[in-house]
Length: 151
Length: 151
DNA sequence: GAAGATTGAGGCTTCAATCTTA
DNA sequence: TAAGATTGAAGCCTCAATCTTC
Picture 1 (cartoon, rainbow over the protein chains, first blue to last red):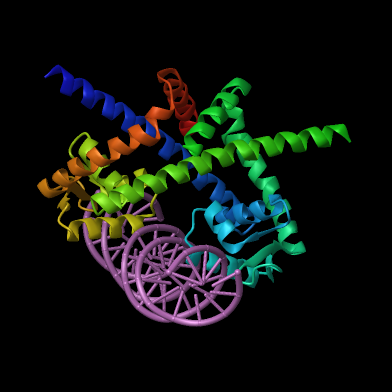
Picture 2: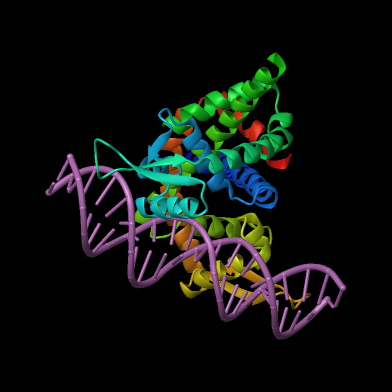
């Protein structure tokens, strides 16, 4: 039956296209995580947490704001922050207007670590990402990903 | 110093571009994993394992071939296979030419589960992926991702 | 009651050591 | 000696229940 055959081919192409996105992201993440662990001693998740805090508007995020950005549950966010606080990279402080909320901020040590990690990460991005694409392709990719991400 | 300023702007754009790839993939994976868990009762990782085996040339893969495809360590691959065997979806068999290797194959139950899961996954791919892109954009994305993945 | 954060229990993964076979 | 697979210990995450505050 031609219609069914056509449909199956289309489905396979769709699965392949998404599979390629999955594989690409997984491979890049693995390379970047390995570099950060070997050269700076932190995971890619820790790096991203520090980066999100450094780029936050007010210099702090609620625990769950950070967790949502990293796609963690509330329990996972609490424990990630626990570990980063234990290592001295983050501090908790209280929100003056809502005492349910725990704010998280970078310590000077966390900022220093972030700067070191960024050097490594940018080098990796240039080697495994930017150098493989033209400027036009990079822009095409950014636009396509923006639409996919925002749904 | 202009040169340093320019360099920092470029680095930020690069971090943003990769961050967008990371966010997009993370969000899509989360949506697809949730659908598969809620409607079929398996994780996206289980689904991908079944899919890789169904698409393998000889109908089987070595434990570590499967693990490499999913970016798992050898111990992680062993235990993933353990769980899927316990559930009756996979079987181990011995490789006739190298007794160090454990082959993994789909059971009929595993094939049936894969078919059910594929219906759900294809629906999600159409809703959250294909419907957001033109055919031309899909092709651009596939080509860009191929180069990033293999590069 | 609902939202933010935390905690205990359990699941999945990595790391390192081990066993078997090549 | 090296490669494939497995196992014990430990890390990080989710889920569900709980506590505090709104």
